[in-house]
Amino acid sequence: MGRIQLSLYAARGYIGGMTFQAIIHEAEEGGLWAEVPGLPGCFTQGESLQELEANLHEAIEGWLLAAKPGQSVTCQGTITLFE
Figure (cartoon, rainbow, N blue to C red):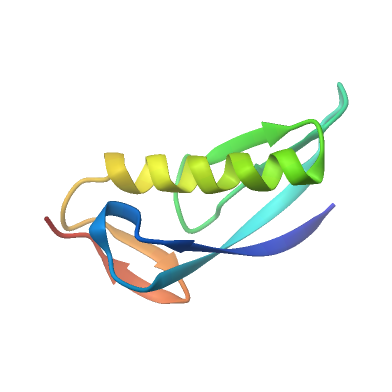
């Protein structure tokens, strides 16, 4: 369906923002689902674009909180997670 970019602030104690790209798809059963290519395994869904965007913020933050120290992720550039 399309791509959007999301900015996430203060995730896992980072100062400043990170911007991630998400790819949005129409779900066969209705609604939308999205994947974040820079965060392997980061997916979510929503009934509307507004709900999907809110769920994407939550999914990205959850992914970052669960990530292992030293793991690299792709956003506007690449960052390495640390404790």
